[in-house]
Image 1 (tube, rainbow, N blue to C red):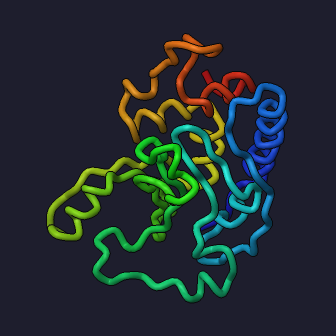
Image 2 (tube, rainbow, N blue to C red):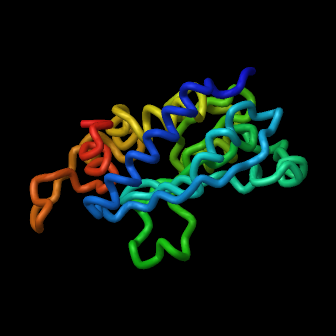
Length: 205
């Protein structure tokens, strides 16, 4: 396995700079914090490099920050793979937030996770109920969706780029991805403030 393409890392950094500037101009209410340099981890080429570009990204529907297991080389060395985990103890790369009441978001880490496979480094989504079912029935096939072949592509295209609507549709369904505001100064626009930010920055539609 090789690390993230330096050109992709540069593109992600430029997008984050652009989004930070557009957010300061429009005030959509998203959170963009960073960067927060991390030491590279040989077992996870490209992963720490991507998460070094920001500390936290959060909009109405998603929250992203570095998995605690990669914050330091020691944390990774102490990371244990659960032999009974049918999915191989993947890392959590982010959370959906739609299921978390706004008043509790400071206290609750998130809803259903988005995962990083430790073997192939694919980013995928799997409902928590399906994960539990897989634990209880390890010989049965369960449904999950591979979103991106690596974490750099995931952030470049699905979080900060034109495929963000696809990510929303995978996690919440096609109808949720197209939900629009009915009233207020943004009436008629997409309900998801992160999507509105991407549109204002010219990064998505």
